[in-house]
Image (cartoon, rainbow, N blue to C red):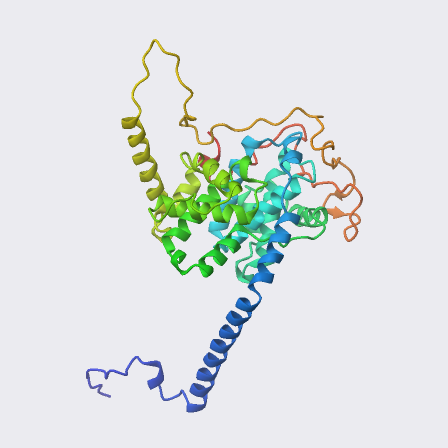
Length: 394
């Protein structure tokens, strides 16, 4: 049988030109699209009508779900210098699973709230972070993107057994009394972009996210309200990109965050820098680095050298080349902070024994965090390394 080679017509690759598509199927597709458009319009109208109530509820919830820095200060084993390593791990895991931005902020909030209510052993710090990420992904992300426990185990270099992730997940939920919902900084940023059409700039949005994630590494912003962090990061991002004055129309709390955040952007994490140097994030990391270099060059030209005979005047903090300078030291154990002692200790007990969870559906008064099997409890494993070991440890 001979085939005639002829030029295909213009509708050769057009889906509607296929004969098997009937008019009834085409009508169903058009009807479904109209329904979706109508639902989106009704949702938009409802959100506009109840926007004030929604914002009021979010501001009420952010007060209820703020971590307590004073309680984290008096932790016995975990210290603030460990936090950047765990945040690096969570950012890499978040990127690997392609989760939503609010999932990362919610996971860090759950982690901090848990650490302000329970004494966390050093060997469990990464396990708590994984449980927080798992809970946050289940709460607000797409089902197909939720991490599998075996994948989290592989990222932790098989330091923990699979059942320990489930046990820690239940322990975190019971400790927080199943209060998962938290208005993240990303939620307030989205509201700000909708309220002011001038803010609808993808580069400004990416820069705001970048600044908010830089803030996650530092103790100074753990107990800051997400609404304040959103306003401060948005104002600082617009200033960095040459849009407006960051202090214009801001109250004292927001202005204070802007000043403190501007001193933390000089030495970001290399993991975070690589994330925001990509074209999909508008290369805002490079933009911020160029802005800092330009500002430092202007300061050097404007500041004359101090004569050697005069005492050196007080200068602004100088940032060294370490990745995380100026790590705050924890307070001596046993100090009374805000009228109370340390959080309730979770001693080693029989709550988790060989994978068997006693009282699984009813948490005891002092539930025990799971312990890695086959490990000496007095030898602390290097569990803060992500699956890229060269990033975490110096």
